[in-house]
Amino acid sequence: RRSDGTATAVSADPGVSPDSTMWDEQAAPIRFLARRVFYKLTKTSPQAAACATQCVVLSPDVVTNGGYYVSGVLDAPRADTTVVDEWNKAAQLCLDRLPPNLQSTVGAHLMEQV
Image (cartoon, rainbow, N blue to C red; front, side, top):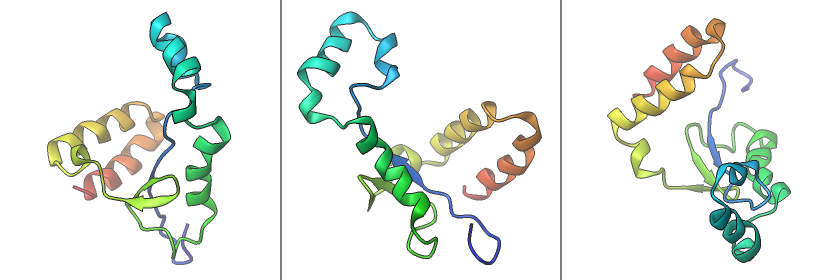
């Protein structure tokens, strides 16, 4: 939150972490590849969390509002986030997972970004 009362929103890409629970739902060969073969190309859980943590602890004046951060560095936005229809789909997915008391407030802000 900035001193003027506004908030900064960013997207922090954690990268791939072999010890993530997301692999538990994958087929055994994929799990094996992710956890045993490609582990040198992936990040540990603390490394994956570092990007989001850095965006939180940095001064809001240093972090670019709406920025997409990869490994703690501002990167070009993903192509699917620059198309209005794709943004609307992503925004709706986020809204669907929020508690009802936050949906109207957050929803209005998400739609302002389009």
